[in-house]
Image (cartoon, rainbow, N blue to C red):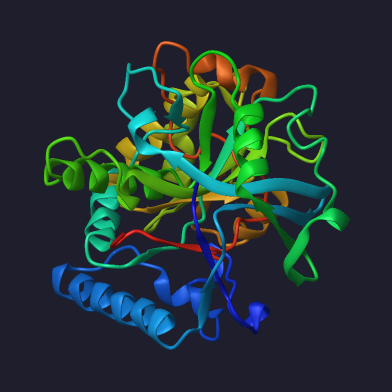
Length: 361
């Protein structure tokens, strides 16, 4: 059962959505974010800065440690209030390996270089502060039925986010109720590379433990659990965008010759089912083209946002569909893995917010 850490004051000045982590003036938790694309020297400097900032937060008493338990979260979204539970998963029960069944599965193919880079961060810092979201299946919505915010201690509140404390005894019961039958019972929906990094780090740590010792803070990773079958949860497609280096027409022609589709200007609409095979095929084509001709690929949530980006004449977009959420968990039987960014839970991100000690007992 975890002991989470939260800022003692100025909560709104602390939290930060991942998409804003590199922006000037972002919440203080953004200082724990490790950006992409750093060379070896830059990476070492950034890790040192993150480590220093985390120790400063601990030593200056910026954060306080809660008693053991979970945090119940209410997040305002476009669909209403999405409910979640911040806790931990046991990395001994998690796998991202293709073809391997486990209680907790990666929800998409992992970027191994990114996961290794994040694992290198975890090796040298005392805290974790993740944006990972893990789905569970509760069609009858029984797990959170007993949770009444007015009976819980309010930990923090912003215009779109509230957090309440669930003490250890109740949290243990809640964990059992979230645990579905079969494997996987839990699926990482967001923050897949973060969770994979925690697994890589734990696999290294446990090799150095004394014989017979199995428990260590690194064995667990901080996540937010969300019920896939809550009304406020919907799977959304993640579209593809390519910024070509010179000629959008060449990419449009290439896609037209290799996948059945129709076009609306620079927007390609594949005439194929909204399933993982279509996503994989589109990704394969875009990777092949960009590998030979150059171009930068992006993932875009929301068709309106995709069409806005297509105002640049050098950009080409591919609008993808999304499968029904009832088909999500069954797909992973037998250890299958979805392509990267096969779906999204929407534009509302899990903030960098709660922390947990991982560097020492």
